[in-house]
Image (cartoon, rainbow over the protein chains, first blue to last red):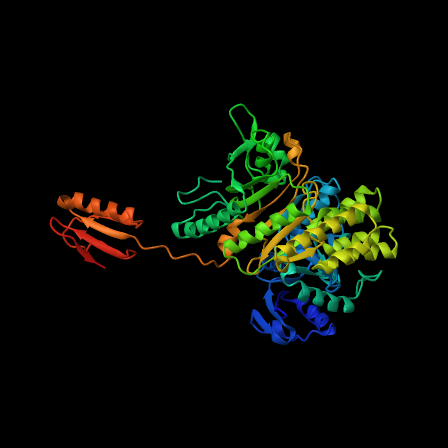
Amino acid sequence: MSQILKVAMPKGRIYKKAAELFLQAGIPIPTDVDESRKLIVELPEAKMEFILAKPVDVPIYVEHGVADIGIVGKDVLMEENRDVYELLDLGIARCRMSVIALPDWQPGIQQRVATKYPNVASQYFRERGQQVEVIKLNGSIELAPMIGLADRIVDMVETGQTLRENGLVEMEELFGITSRLIANRVSYRMKSEEIQQLCDQLQKVIQPSTANETQEIR
Amino acid sequence: MSKPKGFEKPTGVRDYLPHVVSKLRYIEENVLQSMSQWGYRQIITPTLEYYDTVGVASSTSDRKLYKMLNNRGTTMVLRSDMTTPIARVMGSLLKEEPLPIRLAYHANVFRSIEEEAGREAEFFQTGAELVGVDSPEGDAEVIALAIACLQAAGVQNFKISLGHVGFLSGLLEEALPGKVREQEALKDRLLNRDFVGFREQLSAFNLSNAQRSELEGLLRLRGAAEICEQALEISNNEQASASIRHLCKVWEVLEAYDISKYVMIDLTMIGNFSYYTGMVFEGYAAELGSPICSGGRYDNLLAQFGRSVVATGFALKTNRILDGVQLPVPQPEKPIMVTYDAASRREAFAHAASLRKQGKMVVTEYAIEATNDNLSSDGYGEIVHFKSGSPAISQ
């Protein structure tokens, strides 16, 4: 007998894209689920239960096993090393992690980098032999160089619109980001058939990355 | 950090209140009883061990060990597992003991956790080691014992995943002969459970399509006995084939124990490669997000302590079972309360003693006043009053 899969879905921009992917793969789910306030949505037809969570919390639910699988951006996975299985690159919500600064940035004596991703950032600079002070912020990271808190930031870039509007420039790309399907260690084994089936269905409709994946929409 | 307050405890340690201890003892007693019935005798080793011997040999990563210095400046550790201390004993006190040797244990072990609170720094493990049986029979025995222990503890809905470290090693050696760094990179991805990264690494190496699909196919190798035939077809590598054949034989033995229905062969199961040398397995309970049991063959460990002999074993993660699994723990009996006054002391104590001899739980309370108004009768099965005179019984 087929078991229900508990899926931790990220609220926000990723949800819509994930829902489209699921529909393309032939899994019957509604696309407006995240518009209501409901946090747990039962989808008996799809044999799933969606748990709507803040994107950064998805790996936590999956790691503890209260969600069997989840969808989360690679940026979140790279920042925190959670004990989860990374099964598929869903190829959605493509963006990139980049170092950003004001156009007139010059390397100075005291280097400060503000970011939502302190682990990713410090590792990046350490690997390049650069000694920087990393300041953790939680949102609107672009503010930091504009008001002088930090001279550079490490943040996600999608279209580049926010940067342009605030007079910032992208200096170097750290890596590309897409959303991934993750699974709990135990669920991966106890619900192996259901998870494998979902992976097979999704694999058929996932768009592989193209050479110009980071093209900017001007 | 400012001085801790009176009620605070170090991160990761816990108190076990009486009702929790009942459940813990239930698990402990049932599991140890099961092990004893299979011929495994209990061993106790010290909480403190030397870092340079037991510490470095254990499978626990260095940063997770609790280290301290003794008064001579020698580094010691709080034991992080029982397998390594037992290996030490094998090479010393039990050096001449004839094989095979079957040992069991229930002990608290210590692991330092840097991340969030809630992860246990001190927890119980109940486990067994089978030393000196180098065959599928030995491997199957420990798996069967693990299952018997889970059942004895009352865990109902569980599954065991069985793998073999040799299979992956052989397969990788065949696809990337001699390229140790590349093999390590792939093993590393699997150890981190990053299948996407594994596939990405694969496509970066110059492999033939056949080889690449063979290695990618590794990720789908799970099932029952049919996996044995499928997996044998995948590889010509000596080590990989030998590993599969070994697993198939283990499976045969498990069928004879009539427990193969609980076991799934899962060739994606990766253990610590430098520690395990053969079959590895994990047990899962439906309700829990982490494994409740893990084990495997570790033939190279005992040689490090001076007795070169094969060994295989497992440990139950007792705390996870304690916290996460519903168990049929019997309700504790309510004690009898015997109250008395100064004149009736002798009688009351004698009565309590005779009840205790009968196996009852008895509490005696000095009743300051003749009545029992100021004594709460909650939690007691029966109350017996002794006053200078004859006994009276009230519920």
